[in-house]
Amino acid sequence: MTPYTSLADDFYVNMTLSTEMDLPDSRETVLHYFERVQKSYPSMRNFYCRDKGDFVLEEEKGRGQYRWTTIESRRICSGQVNPESLDDAMTQHRLILDLAPFMLSVSPIDCEALDLLFGFDFTYRGNHSQLVAEALGVSPAVERLLDHSGATLISHEPSVTMALDEDCRVQCRMSIETRTNAYQVRTGEFPEEQLSVYFTARQYGSLGTDMSFVDALTDLSKICEDMVENYVVDHVLRPLARTIAMR
Image (cartoon, rainbow, N blue to C red; front, side, top):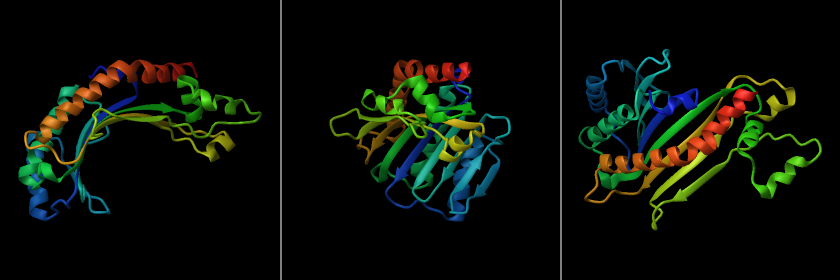
């Protein structure tokens, strides 16, 4: 398993290529593309079309570790939940990006954005926002608000986005998504829900003539690994895991 598997209940690595133009949706093209993906990953046997026209190919989800890929109107997505290794997940994403130009007619000039996301899910029954505030703290500018008599925190989802180059074409974002609502806080009835931490690296715009989709993905992977290992693990994931364990 990856070094991140023990840090959360679920860890996943998703890649999204967004295009400016619509992707082909003819029966022959779509099936030929997914057949090629299945050739590399024969266990991806579940194929279906969502109501809004997205095409999906995935493995069985029951065992908690699976691959998936989709073709949407202007997005090609690929993901792996609880991968054996980061390299295993990245190999899958590289395959998708290798196939896209030739089988789906996607040109680097047609790139609206390329995303790589590292996701971490924690299963927790309780007030997610309160948990995040306790584990990670809140901004000093608003900390005194929580001291107000009778105040109960119902929404706290820290998020930060940074540009990594002068043109702001390469960016990264760390965000936390909570799933507690006012009704749950009011009634005190909290189901087991996923509290999610996302770290995303994104390349905006058309790629240069000397860069392929795979090259861009490699750069994004280095950003994700560096940021997660040197910041997110110690300052976000471990504090959340410790606080949940003490509840």
